[in-house]
Length: 199
Image (cartoon, rainbow, N blue to C red; front, top):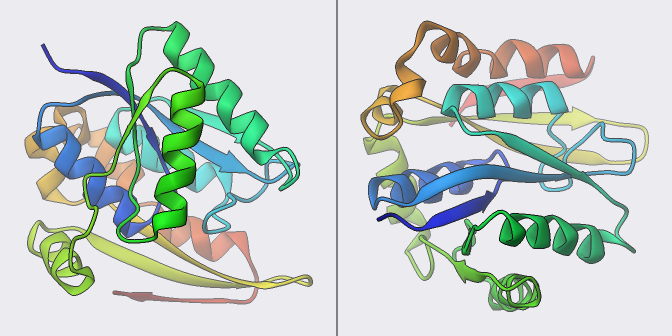
């Protein structure tokens, strides 16, 4: 029987490849956990707006769980969500980090605090080889730069492509195909000052 897990979802290319590997390996991913700022308008990882993150989750056919937090209470809010997952019977947390040891240490710490185990499908992979793998599978990342009054943020939102339908049947439905094609138009509407390119 496959093990039950949540995925710590950034909406970027590394998250997409890690999720692809996890699903292909038989993981039962029951939720995408995405952390947003206090007002829920931008994700903490890539400043992705919630409607785009929801379109990704819809395309994947996996429920999206949104946490809202400032940096001061980020860990506490994240851990509470993990505790809820554990209470529902999930046993693992999946993460898309590649080689940043402090990130892995933190992920293992918060998972352990909730009674879960952290798994990192991309860990210690060669970065160029991982990008080549993502592209060979048929995925593409749309890179958007948003100009905000307070900061300049870069986001890489992974678009689901045909490779997804082989491991996630719901992604082959018409609704999912529509959702997976929305990042470019959604990101264009999210900011007046923005450029996009395929990566």
